[in-house]
Image 1 (spheres, rainbow, N blue to C red):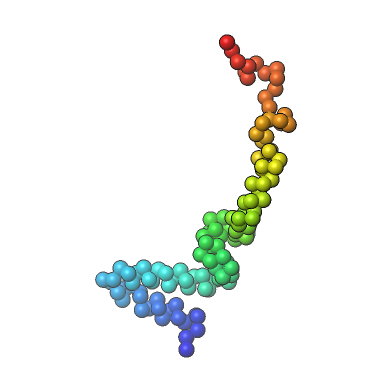
Image 2: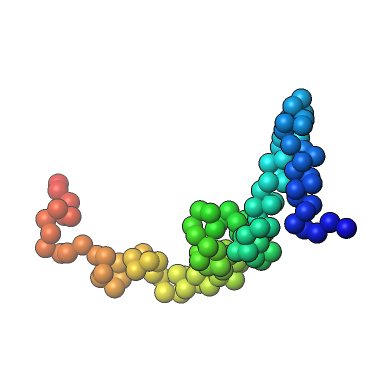
Length: 118
């Protein structure tokens, strides 16, 4: 019958706002059909949608296509657990120690601005 190329065109003609001026739902449906046609006609967008869904397209628009796979990698539960465990076991988060135990973030001893004034 109709291939995936002709179906959006037929639906777009059916729900076009000029043919349905009194129906606001038809205008919304037309926008959805147009968006689907844009995704189907672009090979990269179609691949992103097939792989990650509409969230993949959103991330691609916000951060670029090369960032999509890293975004979904970092949003997985095992990745968050790994980063959390590394932070807990090393007592260090982003190279800033909590207890100033290594001395990297500890203020210098001879600096007068850090001493208490009575």
